[in-house]
Image (cartoon, rainbow, N blue to C red; front, side, top):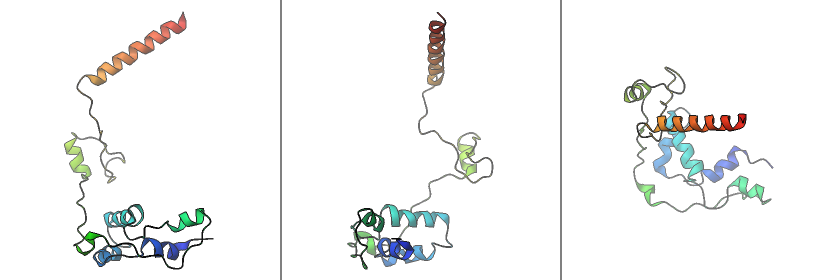
Length: 146
């Protein structure tokens, strides 16, 4: 049995609060950030879906798909204004100046985020590691040649 887009959407879009209507209207021609946000709300958080298993989960269990899904419970924030989260990512130019001209993973002008390390080792730690590793390799090579 094929689920199909209509059946899938009947679950994942079961109850969309009016505050999200503009986001849904922009889903085809809007900014990438709008599409990413909609995907996260719809599929990851299941913001508009009931608490019951999704169509693919029902099929995996050999169960029938209902013709209509129960409506999900309202969220306390349903009547609040929809304010998209701020984009905290740096542009390539901002990242390059912050990292002293570092490279971006996609190369110059690719629009990709700049490389960053989640952890910066303390000064000298990289040298200590290199020296320790070199000594260990040297010792192993000496033992192997005996």
